[in-house]
Amino acid sequence: MALKNTLGDLNNHLFAQIERLSDEELTGEQLREEIERSKAVQGISSQIINNARVVLDAAKFNDDHWDADKKTPRMLSGDDNAKS
Image 1 (cartoon, rainbow, N blue to C red):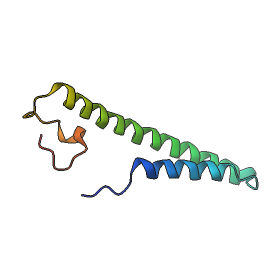
Image 2 (image 1 turned 135 degrees about the vertical axis):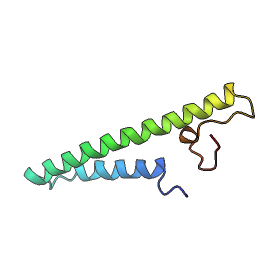
Image 3 (image 1 turned 90 degrees about the vertical axis):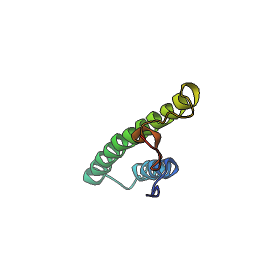
Image 4 (image 1 turned 135 degrees about the horizontal axis):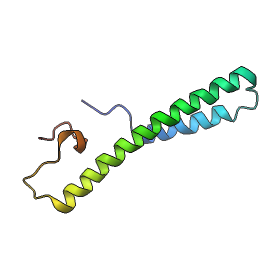
């Protein structure tokens, strides 16, 4: 399964959200809705970043401590072809 989104895409979404929040024409209910959307984007973004951090930490651990014949658990490797 090919990766459809990247951390670069996430970065673009975050900046787009900042631009929407910066729209000075938003007032009242529209502004409140955009603020709620921003909170949702922030929550999801935090989880994506935390997941990426776990994958990176696993890769670092694998490089530093594991023998070549040991495999990182597939869930942590970020590699669909990894063996558990």
